[in-house]
Image 1 (tube, one colour):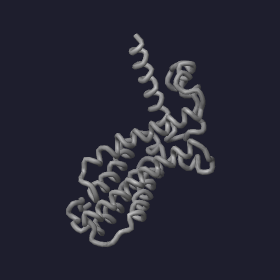
Image 2 (tube, helix red, strand yellow; image 1 turned 60 degrees about the vertical axis):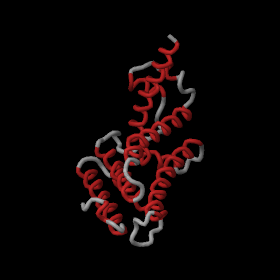
Image 3 (cartoon, one colour; image 1 turned 45 degrees about the vertical axis):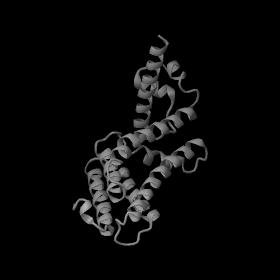
Image 4 (cartoon, helix red, strand yellow; image 1 turned 90 degrees about the horizontal axis):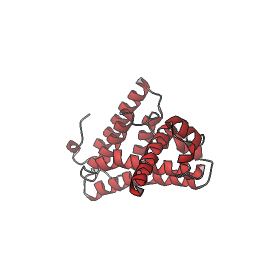
Length: 209
């Protein structure tokens, strides 16, 4: 019975965090509360207090849940590709697919919450910054692997290229919905692909368009 309660508790926690990440992708984290989530999901607020004792703890868990979602949906599938340019391209492509599939109603949790906490020092901003830095570091690492494997035809600054790819990914996330969002994804895809093909020693490892 204890194990059954634990499993139900974990399922409830996962359902709440899924809903919280989705809501925050549109409205941010600051207005989030256990009362609102309970009403949204049709569960008792007292039941949620067993998992989160205060708003900051909830916000931190929401950030971590969004981070894990990003890893599962974007990073892990891309890591199946060979390291270097192919993996770098796969990371960007999986990101755009995540947006196109409308996994989240606001497309990108981190693009929504980063501006919200830019001027609010504390654990939540630090958690958001760490997740963002991990992603950019992964992009930069793949540029370095491409360089070390002689996949690049010209010298490239790994930090600069990672910054460019991140910026183009964010541009696809913050555009309005509908046709504007689809256009932003197409342009983001084309811009990164053109950039990578222009520096590749063997452009054939990447799509032509």
